[in-house]
Length: 452
Image 1: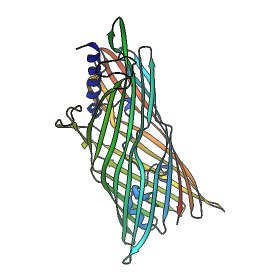
Image 2: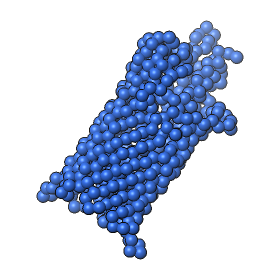
Image 3: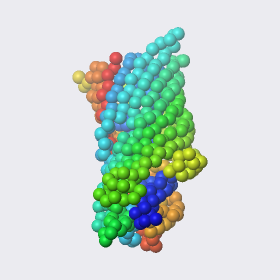
Image 4: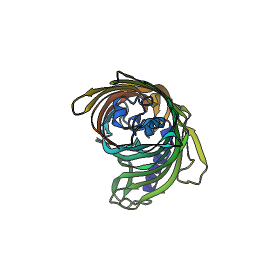
């Protein structure tokens, strides 16, 4: 077997073997947004403390029971500008004892939220129906590392989308129930261009170094229910939500190819490569939330939520050999941490001659499903052969918001900023390292709404 064929097979094998490894370690800092937190500028301006508020068409996703208290229809359109980034330190595979520093750019601009809800009566009972769309998981990110002996360009775009179909009923004046069917779809495309000097072969008197292009396309599908209840007594509200378990199916198409001008056995020339397909299935667990709010003197609204997501019970199922999708499935524990999140917020309405101007502030802790990585052992191929989980990574998020309400027209703004740090310690080919990745969250929301 010639040197080129060996190199090609090694690269593919290393890439394929890394796929299930995402169950334990994540590349690029490990800051994946999978918390399934709702959107909308008003709720996010209050720190996400909205289970016990549940007003307007935004309630379709946050707590569908709140729809039953609508007095008129409402439509909302939301936009998100994400300028977050992750500053990352990573052990240098080629120079043990040194680190690679790079910045992961998560910037994107997307229409991330649309919702419409309308009340109606049937048999003397108040009902409401609603539909919403939102970007549930955002995968837009990119980075570029350039070193004397190594280069990598990575991009990922798009994400998982969700559409919710909600129905709420108010059987008595002070209490309502609601349910929303959430249907998930969407996908992503990931590209990695890698210039890796150890991948080489000899052609005649020349030693030729190879560069690779890895392209991964994924599509998502799944569905579940979100159930909610809301007690509304005078100026006090108490709400709860239950998020039922579901399986998120992922269909992947992977291409790994050479981008050299030279002919290489198994690859050929210029982007001719190996393509294979496989399916994953991630099991998401039960999630529960409770929230309360109180309105003082009709102008000041204070709210607090607590939500728990039992991600430690999450599992991933994938083919034992992804090059052969018909091979038996393997199920592994994702080794995620539970997310226990509290959110607090307030809103004050300023009355002017022409409009109402809300002033909002909020705070939430930001627990990640990942932990710090301790006692990691990295071999000469750059692969992790052993590690220990450290403490759960927990950040924080502060939010500010305002708006402008004139007659039936509503305009809301929110800005979130926060940080979280993930530590990584161990030995790289016998050389100790102590690195960290620091997420800097920066999100700007705009929502425009109309009452009808």
